[in-house]
Image (cartoon, rainbow, N blue to C red; front, side):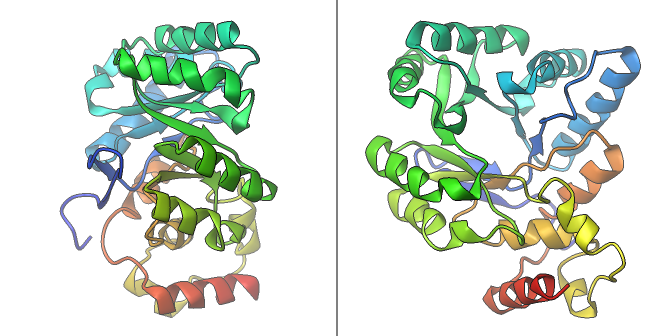
Length: 278
């Protein structure tokens, strides 16, 4: 690796540096919580943090994931090293506030770094609560999410209306619509960006299953995972990408995308053309 520390991008709202590779928890942290399951996930979180990452993203929608995140961080004493992001996913202001406080309880923390409105659900009801929680320092940053490429226009509208400090959207070599309007608008408005679905739930890996990593990609990627992730992290509007995994080898490989050369504009175009023709 060419760099000694993971690359970072600045959060426009504060100037805080955020490492460009994080960890998503959808599905893979929704487990019973046996000793073996917790140990596996603790190893994954340690690998992220030891590589210089910090962002862990979860949601009440992910069933048991918030509790597992809390148990893992408590077991390792790791909460101070994490940028902990979760979401509110309910209807009604009272239910939303209760859910947000329950999230903190489950994750065993007295402060949430990023509270996001999940898939824009009942945004008008939850937004004032999040702002109030920021004023009391229970929440550090606010955000709005969606995982659907079809939500691009809706995300533009909420960005203009609410001016969130973060958005979280899907963007990858297989889903590039965000390049046209959402990402440029986020950069213009000073909104930090988290990226979900970087591998399209494994579809990108399946697409290249019988294809070797191109020789010209060796300048910046050691694996297909890093190839896919570096396409995302090399976009100047992206702050952090959050691939979900519970496998230590995958976490280490993903973290590797946070180091070394990032593809330039010409390389990004070549990457997109290559995947389009696989």
